[in-house]
Image (cartoon, rainbow, N blue to C red; front, side, top):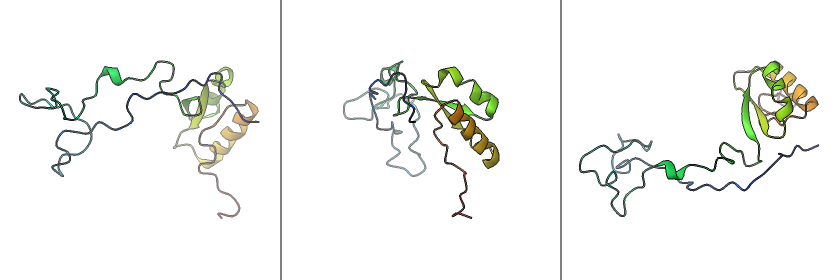
Length: 134
């Protein structure tokens, strides 16, 4: 049985391109990770036409669709069975994502319990070794 979210609104992103740092294309030492320009004469900070856009609050996501996966669920990080059980009543809103530090033995137990509670697990097949792989 495939799990479906309670509500699946259309997710609209105001901008999908990354904001890149001013002059990161010009110098190798200046990485693309965004840093706010602070120079007194800086044309990006002064918002001249034809320059890079600066991130601001207007690019924020809709409150209803913020942190939402394309499937319509919101992610919740799970480390053990007890944390998984907290999602029992919210299984149509949140999907469990098993933390990367969880071992394959515990991971298998979490996946089985999630099926019993009908909770969607986003990375259920991670770290699971099959007979063919061995």
